[in-house]
Length: 392
Image 1 (cartoon, rainbow, N blue to C red):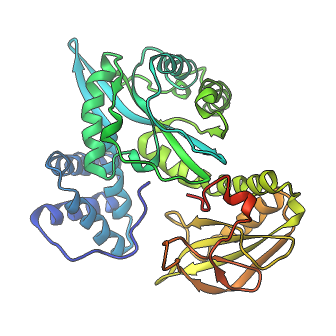
Image 2: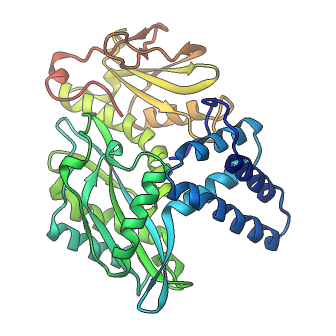
C-alpha cells in the first residue's frame, strides 16, 4: 500500500517534521540491536502524537523528504508509521494484550458487479471458524468488521487507519465484531477485475503467538493453502457470478502490498478469460502489445489486447510499478510469461517509451496496439453489454 513517493507536494519544515527525519536517519544509521531499540522507541513516541492529532500532512511530507534523499531512512519511518497504525497494546482483565489490525484480501473478476456490503452474522461466524482453524494461533481473540470492502471504501491514509485500529482493539480482546452502516462508505466504481477486503483485528496475550505459523507445528505455506481452499469456499455464496481468489490474511499493510502485487497478474488472466468467454474465442485469437509509459520516469506498463491480429484495442490492463521496481526490473519478462501462460502467443513489446496519456473525455488510460499507437479501448458489442471497459 505504501509506495515511495516520486515527487514532493511542497516544502514544509516544522519541529515535528525535523524530529521525524532525525530519528529515522538515526535508525537507518544504527549498527547494533540496542541502538535500534533506542531509535525505534523514540520514533514511535514521535509518530503517535501526529496520528492521534490527525496530522497526516507531517507524516507524508517527512516520507517525501526522505524519499528524495534516497536513503534507508524512508523505509524506517514508513515501518514505524505502519506499525503504529496497525498494532496496539490493550490492557484487559489485568493482562496486556497485543492487537494487530488484519486484512484478508480477495481478488475477483466478473461480467457483473463484484460485491461489497455487509457480510451478515452467519458468514462472520463461519469466517471466525476458518480464520481460527488456519490463520490464527491458539488462544487468540478476533474482531471482524461486518463489511466486504472495496479499495475505495477502506480508510484512506494513516490517521484514518489508526482511528480504525483504536476502534477495533477493544473489541478484539472481547471477541466482538464491528458493524458499519452502508451510508457511511463511498460508492464503489465498477471494474472488470478488482480486489475486496475483509478487515479484522486479532489479539493475543503480550509475547504470545498471533498467527498459526508462529507455533511449533504451524507452517505459513500450509496455512495459505488451507485458507485459499476453505476460506474461499466459505465466501463463494457472496461471489455468485464472479471468479474469486483468496489471498493470505496478514497484517493490514502487508496484505495491501501483496494484493497490489498479485492483482497485476490476476488482471491479465481475468482479461483473457473475459474475452474468451464473452466473445467465444480461443486464446490464440487474441494478441497483446506492451508499452512502457513515463511521466518524469517510468510509472507503469500498459498492455493492450486485440483480436485476430487486428489493430483496435478491445481491452487494456495497467501494470503499475511497485516500490523498488524501475526500468531495470524484469516486469516485461513477467508480463510476457503470464500472457503466454494464458495461451497468447502473438505479443508485441514496444522498445520505445510512451506518455501516460488518458482520454480527454472520460479520463480512462489509453493502451498500445501492435502498431505503436495509444488508443481508447473499444470493446466489441458483445463485451460492452456485459462488463465495464477497464480494469482496476
